Length: 215
Image (cartoon, rainbow, N blue to C red; front, top):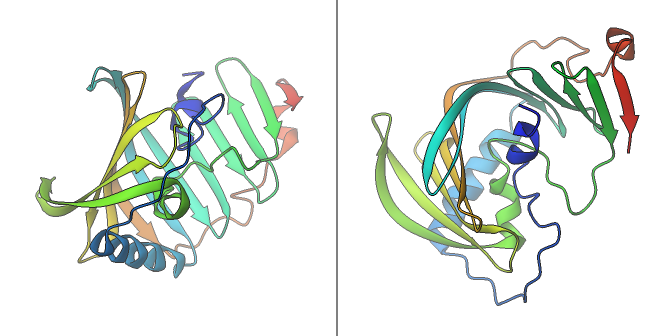
């Protein structure tokens, strides 16, 4: 579980990668779908996703774990098994219950916030975008959109499965150049809930027995 968070900080695989930028190509139909979904999520006071995170190699998922994700504005909280990540708008707190460790860091331009909908914004400058037709996902006739990096970033391509009619994400598949695969399947979505005021606050008093490292 130590590496789960790093695997799903989507788009953060650019460290150490080298490539030459090419002219970006964005399909008009795909762009409208993604922009409509982004506007829909951004219009909400807060959002909640319950999802399954799958990981594996050679295109095959070998391990699946449940996760939950809350967001409000630019703040979020992610929980998968014994690993939790909080972004309070300023710093990212990675909390590992198994090892009783907390790492604290400020986001930078080479890191992407985790979100089941991260690519809805990052596609605008980092990816070529193609509308790839329809495919059934959990009984929904989903629109399939393929993203490929404009320049080398450790990813081969990403598939986004979306419900264009409801303006919601359904599933995301991320394929690495190292043959790793990561899949996020959204199982439940809620919006505009009454959240705890401290939902996105890191309370150090709850982690007195943890090793806290600030990067």
